[in-house]
Image (cartoon, rainbow, N blue to C red; front, side):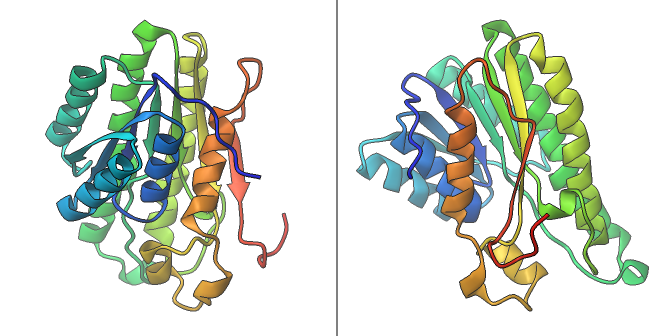
Length: 243
């Protein structure tokens, strides 16, 4: 079953929107008639996603944004308010990976992961909340990972940052609730993306989930009635161990 909520009149930002999960989410939101800001570091990729949305008669703009740079984040949020006057959906998907044995992991790689996966996501949540509070509505969806609640070898720092995403989402959901704003975290298992290919080269790519599976999970959250809320979703590849 394809989930397709009517998002007419709603404005969305998708970080990491140029490829993989972010691209699939941006396309899915546009198909549901949301106006989408496609944000990522690589200009050619976000231009291509935006063109694909527009070719299908959707509404989209692109903004080059490295969420390790607070100034670029601010410009992204200024753009959504300038063009659409509101922000209804924030999908924090942008992330980077660095991998290696714990005892050999460099401080510079640790700092890079914290800057994007933790600090950048935190700032995006904060800025989204600031725009949503006056509206008394909105939905912030953070893309974590299966490593947001369990560990894998050679992924110590990446795991730590994804645990941080879960922690900030828990407090965000509590603080946002009184403003009628929902916040959820999605934990994808193995998805066929470049990042997973780097992290788990041992996995056969043919058994991995597709980015569209995660996009459908986002649409499921957005399809819920005003009476329902979901705090977190763990979606795994079918061949992995249940529970």
